[in-house]
Image (tube, rainbow, N blue to C red; front, side):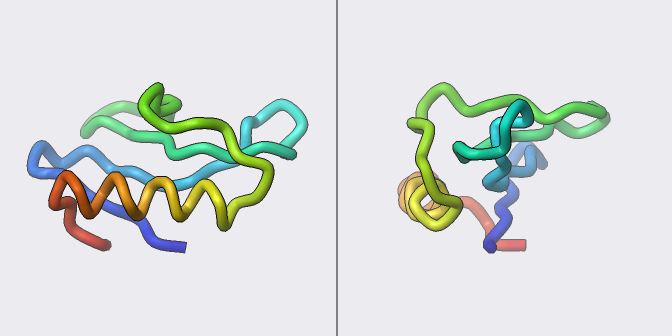
Length: 67
């Protein structure tokens, strides 16, 4: 799965919901932070592949770097 970095140095990747692990969504991590946060711009998806497609499209729109 692809991971991204924006111009501010924030990292983005798809992760499970953390409760049951059955839904997936793009999440971000700010530099210096220790916990990931869910991206409100993206919907919850039933598969990791669907969530990755959402994140890929959003990252392309924003011009983020693949890491």
